[in-house]
Length: 332
Length: 292
Image 1 (spheres, rainbow over the protein chains, first blue to last red):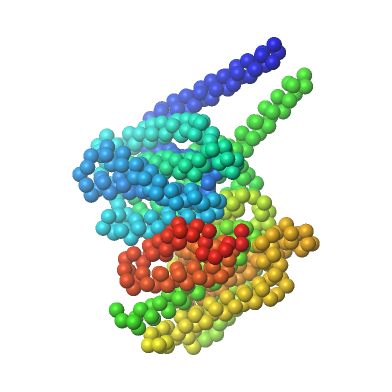
Image 2 (image 1 turned 45 degrees about the vertical axis):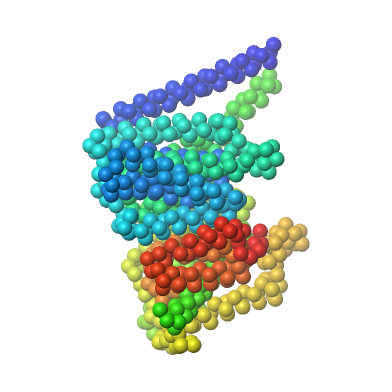
């Protein structure tokens, strides 16, 4: 009897928590919907940059945090998504919608090819192969002048009229981010996502349970590549230009830092990390040209003192308190 | 294209491979013994080049500038490496790969801007020392004398490393630490001191590589990122922690790059990555046995 009430109490508790979370999310979304009418356009642009980057970082975390794979070159899929749209819009007369759809699909296809080779490796070797193959793609983009315009990148990319104003870009990126986050969050909670976690925590046991670890990792890699491609498309809408530096490995390192800063273990961690890094780079950029120095020092402090990331730390604290509360209840 | 052009190009590639080897040997030593992915290795290399610039220009581009730089710059980088290891790295030996990588990456970012602050962002260059200008001919292939000098230095460094690792007591401890750290600890050897030593040695090698490359190219920002990727690829292709693997793959990458420049210049930048990608796909654990 008492067990029953306790468990029902727990479910109501969880329901309340869920409702609370939902409410907070709705309020947040509402604020984000109203905000562009209240702030100067530059800040809308900044927020849209954050949305784009947040999607990129969250897609990486599916492989990095949930898959436990040392994916060192995620920027490649971002860049390929962006370049696909840029090339289609400047060099062909194909419809805009097709370009937007093909961007993420090509990214996912590339992720399949690179992932197919990489998932056979473990640990550091996995990371090094992603790095090598990613740099190969970068070098091709950098050198293929006829197609990619090489070092100069592609500028003044034409976008449809309804996407020329900053507020329409803002709402587009916000909508795409929200939908993508919803899908990614569903994926992490699905049986597939849980299996991925199991394969991360104990690959040998998972294999012996009959789980095809490599296949799961490959699928996660492709999904991550797809959403990085989506982020790449958003980047083109926002900047209307692309450059090979999108695919260079230090861009990928930046995404890794975002994930680590927010926390790999929390779904919204990379989003927070992206927001912090984009805002900080803007603010620091106002005062000094040495943004990378500041970022380096920040990263140093983060790694030494807050390795679980900001959201990771907060969640740990909350969980710790809840557990302590729980044990007190039990003793009563 | 005649044989002479081809062979002189190959020799130049080989000499570049020697520099790759010197840098990658340091990286692979650190990989093997400390088990750390040192992203800062390229930065140490860049610092070596800038330090060499400062030393040699302080002597007014004189005859002895380069030789003094060759002595001083790598040691300066070595001392800095020692400070980095004792001050930062030793706190993260028990962390996961990602954390260790990002710690060393933070050093990349910091040194990048520090170099900009100290030396400014304009290009710099060092003269090739007096005695090493001009070129010689080897079997009909002409080769700049400085590259011939590099061809001499590379094997010397390899020989020195071999002597150190297999003939000295300290070197044997290093190898033992790479193979089984716990056992070394049980035997009562202070393995963290070995770590400091190896990291310093790795730093010295990076600094040496930077000093040696300085007269052949412009000393500039961004040289850290380029060499780092190459060094990583070389280390992984060769087998993590295996110095001889690093030697072989340095030669492969150096020569591959040189042949690429000769045959299809527009794709030469792609070739090293392609070689690395193909080798990794077919021999994912490296050409030679990894120490891990």
